[in-house]
Length: 501
Image 1 (cartoon, helix red, strand yellow):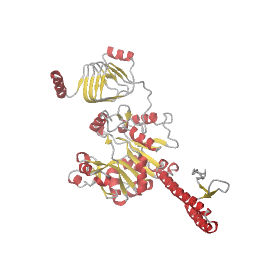
Image 2 (cartoon, rainbow, N blue to C red):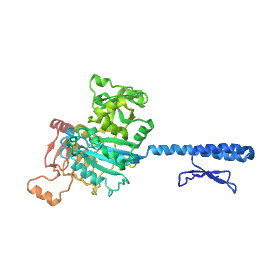
Image 3 (cartoon, rainbow, N blue to C red):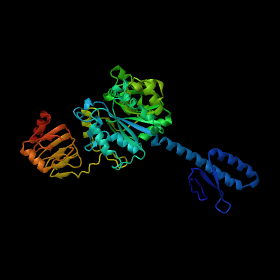
Image 4 (cartoon, rainbow, N blue to C red):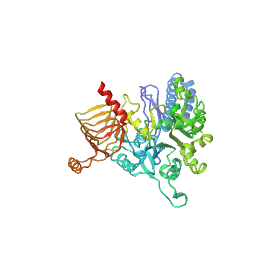
């Protein structure tokens, strides 16, 4: 860096600091220093010179002081950039188990491959967060029904779709059997899944990796992972757990923790109930909440998002707890007693899409004004597969508080408070309310539709005069004419109400 008489700065190619001493003119010169300590020595020499040269040395001292300050600020900036360097971070996205609580949506697809928001998949959330955070080394661990997930990842996150991973990679690590007695078992849990691929973090390509992010593939949120990692590094923690304040109604569904005034985790309990739950209540004003918020949310819940020092993670999985299969119920509670484990507050929208009810509610919540979570953020977009679909065509229809995905055909219908997926076909006089329709993977031509109807079969989409309420319609569903899918009592009461209005 060079500082001229008119206070301009520049940095040399070697990263060394250059400072112009004195005023502009024929007596001005450039002095080159390597570090702050050498600058200090030079300042002392200039003081000796002051006894001989008088006021001329004052100009040099001012310049040297400026140089010292610049060097200090430069070092702080370099340290901050080093802490935020995403090239030293690898992310592991856990593909989840069998997804029994999301059945039948997981009958033929992995949990992270379940569609959400009309045009996305659950896996797009952590993948997009990684991309927006600059993290380009990503592993996805899968075991159940992984074909649909593999296909989506291959289409969405390759070098031809506009997402540039540079020297990074996105790799799917499927459960596999290996020679030997231990290699005969599939993944036994989240920790065991990472353990079976521990060698990936010890090869030459991972030598620059310092920290490992452990993420879930079935959560809905937007997060800057590098802020999370930087907080972890600056605190000196071995493990950092991203957490959020939680109220009584949902606390027992999560892993809860107790922390001290500095955010260090003192104890951890996985999904406690009864007296064990009440024992985990803490003063959440420590996390920065107001007194009113702290009273409403007296628990600190784990999001299932962790960052480990790489060496600590490998030590825990291979040597310290070689038989522990799960992070949330085994590794984290045991590690909190032995390692510096810290809590990181994420006080923003986050939802675990682990059940049919949470999936349904999270989708419909996207239609609110304003929604608590939105896929629309120009600065931090959510990525997904490029489908090259045409805009949706809407003929003589009424849409109320709904999301309509691209490539759909809506004809003379009423859509209320619903999410309509890609390639949906909704025909005349159809009424959808509080419904999540996942769309279709393909189009049927007019000739194919005519042939199906002639054979007494049902085309993909929803037929005429059909009423559907509070329903999830899976992909490629075929619903015929004059169908009613709803809670009959509620529907009948609404009809009476409309009659008397």
